[in-house]
Length: 94
Ligand SMILES: [Zn+2]
Image (cartoon, rainbow, N blue to C red):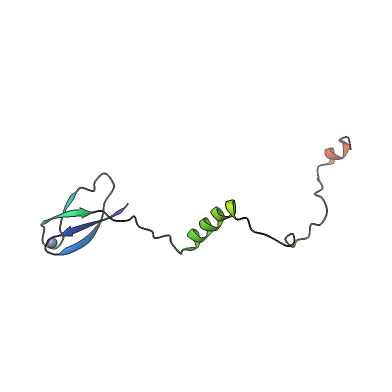
């Protein structure tokens, strides 16, 4: 649910969690009960700096700036991949 900001003429700015359909242009102030007008503000950017946001940014960056490696990743496999299915040995070879 998005967080909306309202400004009461007497008490100042307050925030209210409302569903998109239920967020009206005016909201009763929780302090004095007077009608408060909704403010236009930037959407909440709570993911900025989190591990999930860094992963998403790095993944998107690889599309235009792929990482350069000097060697294949270390691992036990050195040769071509061999099938363990015995039927594959009966296939014609090049
Ligand atoms: Zn108020």
